[in-house]
Length: 130
Image 1 (spheres, rainbow, N blue to C red):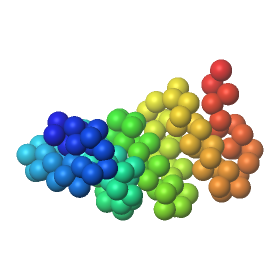
Image 2 (image 1 turned 180 degrees about the horizontal axis):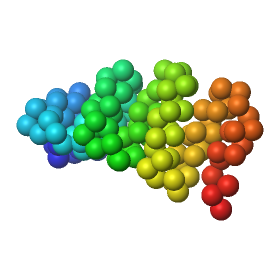
Image 3 (image 1 turned 90 degrees about the horizontal axis):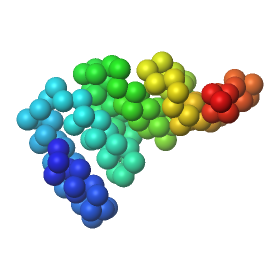
Image 4 (image 1 turned 90 degrees about the vertical axis):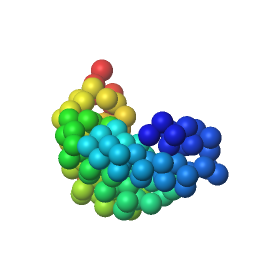
């Protein structure tokens, strides 16, 4: 996993090698939620392979349900493919685990705006956490 993390930091010319490293780490440590989460981040944010990213986030969630970054990552990946109802469910799960994170609330507000649920969107933006 450390090799994958380092390759990600080295930039885009190393992303495929980072994926290979994460894949190897997932074989060595299949029950390590962090491996699956890091793999999901790479796939979603850098390689734009949202389907595979969602599968990785789901595996991380299966292994550690209370890890809110995996729920957030899943929501963001779902946003990229415009699946807004599941996005909202993922963000709600993230909020359930980390209710004070304004980034989750802001993403939830954006999703509700896409769904044209404007009043709910307004109430989701972080200012209400004040």
